[in-house]
Image (cartoon, rainbow, N blue to C red; front, side, top):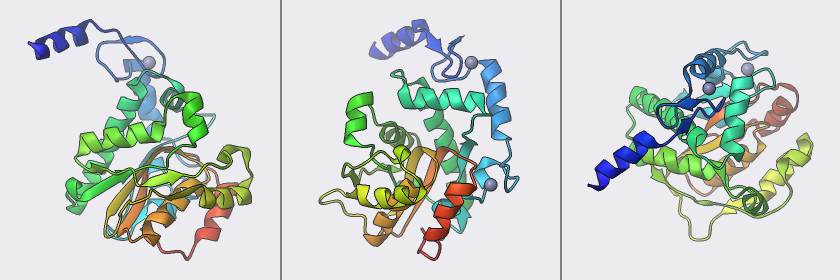
Length: 258
Ligand SMILES: [Zn+2]
Ligand SMILES: [Zn+2]
């Protein structure tokens, strides 16, 4: 009975394309035009290494490489001003209160990680999903923590364990800072949640957009220092930026990676 009611209400509900707002038939899908553009965006090449986002090796390689698997984790898209469909989708993910973009990307990320696990012979249930918590003040302001909701959904869709082990200690917003200050601020901003145990754990750190990589690097370092076996990043998008990002990553080189 409940199931039937739910099915009927799903049928009647109006769904909108998370990129352009056009009415769509199913929840959390792109309209046909945006789907085509999205496929094009995924083929976009990094201006520096000429690779697509999943395999771009510029600024964030250490974050994405897992020694345990001997593989590089994937990021779906590049985020840049020349990439309007991706930009709109990510804006929806960050600021919209409806969850269509979130669900769309959680499905995409889940597909990526499951295919990576399949190639590597890994069982999803042995892995844990975590995220860099947003600043408490931003959560109050925007009413949501998009990395957290994404991580939760990815856990649900893949069978990994949702594992919120990190804590944001307040501090400045990363986007207000320059390169060197970002690294310091990120390192200060996160810590382990009290009582959290990550020893021997295999972690995927989920985030929406990776820019300089300093936030994710700080989170990765904390997990590894506290005994996680490996920890690497799965993000919706990253910015193809050599300058600032690469300088920053250089300062991370030599550090143990996941
Ligand atoms: Zn559309
Ligand atoms: Zn690149």
